[in-house]
Each structure stands twice: as C-alpha cells, then as structure tokens.
Length: 371
Image (cartoon, rainbow, N blue to C red; front, side, top):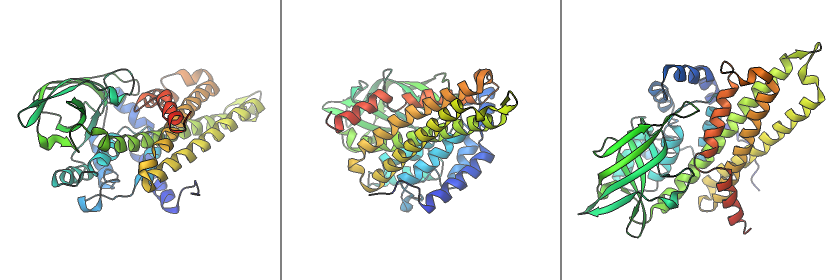
C-alpha cells in the first residue's frame, strides 16, 4: 500500500515553492492586482517558468522538468496557500498533459513553448452553467481539408489573456479537440467579472478556420486526449483548494491565539478548540486524498478517475468549511474587504465550480463504485 505522506523530494519542493511565493506572490499581491484592475501578472509567470514550474509536466526532451503529477500538485497546493493567480493549471497542467500524449513535432514545439513560458493556454470546453464536456454543442463543420468552428464557450479560465485555446467541438461522429491560436480570425473574447479577481472569458467562434494541424489526437475522439488532461487539472485544482483551506486555517488559528476576551485568548475556549480540531482533521484527510490522486496519476493513470474525483469532491467541501469557519471565528472583521479571509472565500467558490462541482464528482465516485 502506498504511504500517504510526502516524499523528501516533495517536502523540499514545497518548502522552496512556499519561500518563493511568500515573497513574490502573497495575498497582498492578489489584492494589488484586484485594485489595479489586473487579472494576471506576466512577470510572475516568467519567474515561474524560469524556475521550471511551467515545465513541471513537460518531457525533458522538450525542455521541461517532467517532475510528474504529484509534484505538480505540490506546487498547486502552495499556490493555493497564497492565492497565487497564474496560468499554471490551465497551461502547465491541463494543456501540457494533453500535448504530451501527442508524439509529433508540432506537440513537441508547443510543449517547449509552454516550458519556456512563451505559450499560455485556456481550456474552452464548457457552454452552460455546469461542467459538462460531453454536452458540448459548438460545431466544427467540414470545410475542404479542415473545419469551421461556430458557437460559444463560457467560463473559459485564463481565456482573456491566453495566446492559445484548447477548444472542444462537435464533429460528425463525436467530439474533437482543437489547439487554436487565440488571435485567429473569427474569435471574439469577452471578459467576465469573476469574484475571485482572476481572469475568465466568454469566447465566441464565428466560422473560425481549423486545419488538420489544429486537431489534437483523432477527429471524433477528443476524450482520449482530453480526459487525462481533465483528470490532471482536477487533481491540481483540488490541491490548490487544499492549500487554500490550509492558508485560511492558518489565519484562523493565529487569530484564536492572539484575540483575547475576558482576559484570555479565545483559543482557550473549548467550543472553538473543538471546531478548530475538526477543521484540522478535515484538512488532513483531504490532503491524503490529494496525495493519493497524484500517486495514481503518476503510477496508474488509466485508473485514476476515482481517486481524482474523490480528491476534488473532498477539497471542495474542505475549502468551504475552512472559509466559513474562518469568517465565523474572526467575527465581524472576517466580513470586511480589508481582511484577507474574503479572498479565500471567493476563490473557494470559484474553485468549487471549475472542472466539476461537488455533485459532479460525487456522481463520478458513485458510478465508479457501482452505486
């Protein structure tokens, strides 16, 4: 049985990542971006690429670090602690996982561009209010040797600034995944206001040209390439939400030790101790589920769906509990914009919906367990 604790290498990676993020991208950095009307920081992403984070899943032959999915989850968790806004999930995790399954020069070039920080991706798959890739209706009509894409995608995270799009479209006999430059004629991007101060867009496609070179994998067989990429993204997002919960819990624990009432720290009150202990236990169980998901993606990716959905469902609940308890235990200050807990709460709400909410992943777990 795999022991659900971090390896020495993962601990070192987490420590290094935390040191960098505490300095370069604390929550105050997100607040400053929000106040300036910015949704991302290209310079921060450049620094991450220089440290090898953009290439965490890119093969060494393409200039990447190829550290594996468990390592990607470690980085995502540390980003969650400080609420770092970057294209890490959409580009370094989801797009890189999709591209590394394609063994041609075009994919190797794209992977090298990801590792170098020059190419960023957004995943354009959902069209309704909930995550449902199989329900995609955007059409890719045959046009000579290529296609013409028409339709709309919503909640495209990083869609406002990414220079490439992974687009899921319906073709004659199924779904097909396309890799298309975001500036191609016929693409229109409309920024969406997100409560977590991050980038997302609604993207419309009006007869957008797509050649055979833009197809990832096989025509009418998108999920062979897309499903592993979604699993990787869902696991990394779960890790980010676990880090978010840990960050919120750390703030709350510090407040319980510092705030006094009736001449004693409020952390000495048994009722608050019980609530804090319950939250800590929930965070630990979720962290184990995320470690298991990373191990499965690295060791047995074909059978990782159950572990990934369990991790995402648990992380959604844990993050929600952490921010709710954080606001309540902080009292009135927890509801103010001047206090950082609100940023954690808003990110928890968006993370809960992206790539499948609790109900979606609970359904996957139930189906795979035969319930």
